[in-house]
Length: 377
Length: 256
Image 1: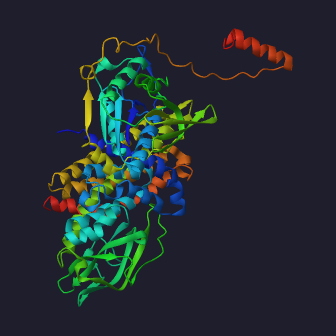
Image 2: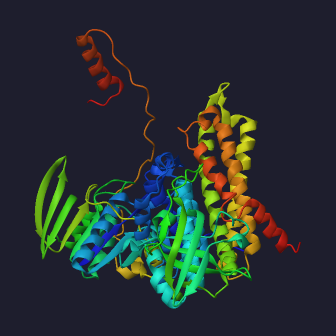
Image 3: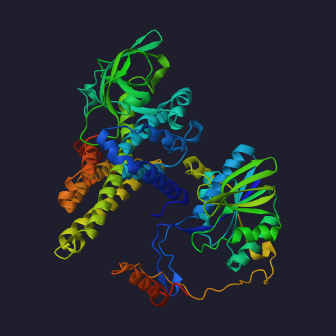
């Protein structure tokens, strides 16, 4: 067993950290305030190979492993939660299903532009009647000659308003609840998006509703086997869970660093508040939880890199890291006291960003369900 | 165009320096490419992109220097040579001798170094190397243009600009403002691991003990005194001036 990063992983971590600290962190407060998606940051990240980090080189990616990718998500999330979420959704939810289930031609046509940073990808699963229960999907795809005609609405879709390509699910066999995945270029007639949602947190991330009215895509835009969509997105979400757990670690680390720095500076009763046991215990718990969550992320990512089953570990990581993140950000506000409640300090934003991770890509309740099922319950 | 870049790994300028047992403590310190050398790397890669050719990194330092070299390779340099044999470490005099021996076995049109290293800040090694090689040098460049074999360098001359022309081969050193170094791409990082990095020893370079004997000696290493609060002089202007002169000559002893 070896807990040391490889030289390459360490270099990727340090390169992403340097970029994120210089190019993203200074924007974070403003992006949150204005609810603005930093498209210019994504263009820069695209040129530097971030947007296809774990995608093989033959499809425009950098060909790095999942541990490297999780390190990158943590660093970007550390700089800005919303930017981290959009980055994670692009890679884990749009690029990865294309890589896993796409034909060679689909990969060349749709994955390469996303992985090489020419465009941003998006994943459309959630609907008004289908969240945790994907069986409630109402969007339909009907084969008409050599084209699929897609109709329906998708809600809460990350990156939807900026995406070049969307991977989405639609019912293809109503009687047997058969769901399939499709690749939809966003310039297809009939495809439109709503105004971005006004969200509690993750406000730098673009979230919209997708509206599909008689969207016609060629028959070959079916992704993976017909009626195989259910299995596909379950495995897509497994990979996403590891990465979004890394995002939680990044946000929590940011809140913790602010709290630690503040506790050392802030004087009450003639000494810095970091000398008080009440504050020390909070900081000790925060540091410990962040480290444990990161280890859970690394273990799940490592299993994935080794080609071993990691569904259970992905849920452990996602569940623990997301709840840990909310708790850590909450405690950070407590340490900063009145200042923590003010927008002048970043920790209230961290808490608002953190809460999403307990909901998106499988709620905490679903994670516990996945874990219980893996235990044979 | 074949370009050689002189690169030193130095402390991250944001690190806090601590002195222990008369030496700067290195434990847990983050090391980076000397910032002036990073301009040199960037300039070399830009020239390569414009004129074709190769960029080779030359470095002297302990094995940890590999990290800085890999970063330069990830930015776009082609290969690197590292003199990490401890018997090659000395002062500016020996560094120039070692680099000259490393340079003499290769073809080059241009050598670029940083104006100085941020750790010891001597600003000597690159220009000494030019002397060793018998080629001209232009130091502290804020702009470099190359047309054929004609070189035009804009020097930062204490706030003024001095325009100097030369003919290849030439050695130049980079000043802040020469360019904005790029971030290494993640694809670049993955490729950097496969680019050639050669290690050389004193035996490979055939240097004599004479060449490797430092001409300077570090007598003492200490931190500057912590800054103290200033003092505002009071009273008549004439008296203030007298007191100021007295303080500078006798108390602070900064005026002889």
